[in-house]
Image (cartoon, rainbow, N blue to C red; front, side):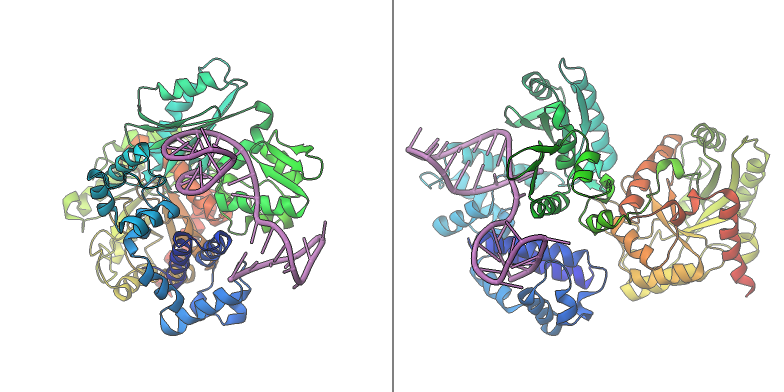
Length: 576
DNA sequence: GCCGTTTTCGGCCCGACTGTTTTCAGTCG
């Protein structure tokens, strides 16, 4: 599954972690982390590059280039293997427990021979940490508690669940006297596909009332820490909520800082330093006389650094600072650009809303067109037949949808060999066909790739639905050579879906970036099974933005005539 | 270990909170 770049990045990250645990130069460890990130985000396969090309990657110098080359040639990195013999893998795993970092993990291993999370839990239960320097009774209790949390809960939460919690917290805090502004930041604002914790930023002159209000919310089960400027709690759902309160004058700098990502803000700080400036959550200051340059809005801070405004969804250190310097940031697709939905179900198959309800809800949302795409007959549980499909088409054609155009489509099943339901004649009757993988998830990469390529080459298939078929926290993505699949999609004029369903978000941002490099077009669909799901489109747009897409890349951001031409061009392939 | 619009050497982001300390190390984001 993983690209060679991901494997190399994982090795470099492991090396960085082991350096930190062994207490070597902290800066050295940071350099390896940075290089790992740069390689993970590099477009070319690093195992195809020579040393000179490797060293052109920012953060990769002679030493790291040699290690990558060694991995390319031998599949190993000798110095990493040596470190691994000194530090058991369980010691590194221990640093995943909240509150336990590299220093304490090493102390536990050195002094007590503790080499796994399980061993640590046993040692705490047996009272073996008593007398160990740096490990008082409070630390032992907290660690034991955090081990259980770490064992019992997923580390990432679905974006819509996090968004709901954030909205509840914000609504409560906005009602607190003295609260001037309140919003969410962090990975939620960046629209990452999954959310680790929720960052809430508030502006107020006095902070105590806000901190108290947060800790007293009914949803809060645990106060992790609480100070004058920052409070962290855990909710019933298990997600951590961090609240930061700043003066209103620092709003922009604080929002920028707490939105992150860390690599992005780190780069901003480096850029500031090179200009004789320093950036923190209170503002951008001159180093020499501490005078304030910008703080009120994010736009002010970026401008003072000589940068165009960078949308939160782009702040991942994937080249956005260079683009902002050069004025070449993309004009990102927005929810307002989305003119229609090309993947939606009704109660004819596994949807819960009727055709009429779906049409009415889509019209209410102001869509210009809607494709109804119920499941085809090879998904046996749906009991679909040709007759039912034709009857639905008749019903759909009879609906007066006002200014909205209705398209009759279907979600075909891509079988193990890459074929789809129904014959050419029947398929030709549809306005649009989505085709998706719904079974045989464990095929080899080679088989799976052939399967997708065959589907792309089918003249009746316009969109590949939820391509990796992952279900977040439940099912892994299928294994395919995505570069080969994307190349086929671009060549055949087949759009790749960005499925907006919160537990899919498929393609995700990283694959969107890769697909775009192949010249692929995209469809941001909701895959709605109910009228309320139409609102999920914002999450699909989030992934699209994170993949640097413009409205021109997204076929359902196009006017209907242009979309129809795209669909027609694909179908014309069948006569060639 | 990397890097350079003050630097090829000497820096490297920085603030908040906790716990165990008697002035700060460790962790987190």
